[in-house]
Image (cartoon, rainbow, N blue to C red; front, top):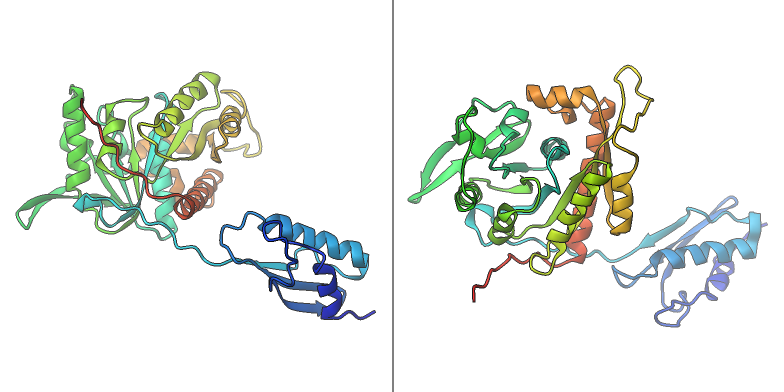
Length: 371
């Protein structure tokens, strides 16, 4: 039995766009109808990039054609949706050092010991492996661990004078530009600084770093909520924050405080999503076995409750610890379970950043007004 374009159009004329009340054929939304054996398809074009009825109208079209023609014509997965392109909102930073940095991502945690620096390091490496230009700032002033994790403990950044100004050239490894207070102190010495001294050191790394063009600048922030976090949002326009937690309840309770800090009225930085670290233990020799040492899906539940994406679940694997201690991040090895986990995490982060920049205006730097 043969079908024509008119057969398809007659069915689609019964479908009205909820916003306009007009049928989708009269609106010029249907185009490029095709037939191939018992299959048919067409292009469904929308006028607005952010039309909220895209998916529902596509499903209604499938249902209408199946109800009319049954098994005589297969329509599922054959409707091509077309929407106008939206221009991404570019983040703007007034700091000269950050003016060519497209996205600034703060990696934070409500408490220490959840593997925040490990996540920040491996995320940076995984992003760089996609071909992106990536930098990382070790803002954990009191416990800088990024130099060790990048195998850069013996390195010292160069300080250059450009047009009479001092600029710090980041050290680079694995395709990532790195700056840390750890480059400027003796690793064996305890750093005893008051809050203003720590904030001043962080400002120097941010304002005098010779970052150049970057797609992503990852900020490994201190655990908890502190004046360092306030310094970050005062000094630059932060694209968004990623909260790291383990599944256990004591960790997710503190993670919630971190979410509240960033999304509060005084700071108002979007939280891009959560990363659940130490989700389960998997022995290297038994890759299919999972042992939930810290509970199961605690961070996943928190993400659902807060209506936030769960960007990834990272298992406990011995190679992560070994990679951190030896300065060879696990994300370098894509052909492993943990390498793939960080690769998938990077893909999720890229996706949520793109969505955030399409749908939200740039974050405003926080201004503290003293009465």
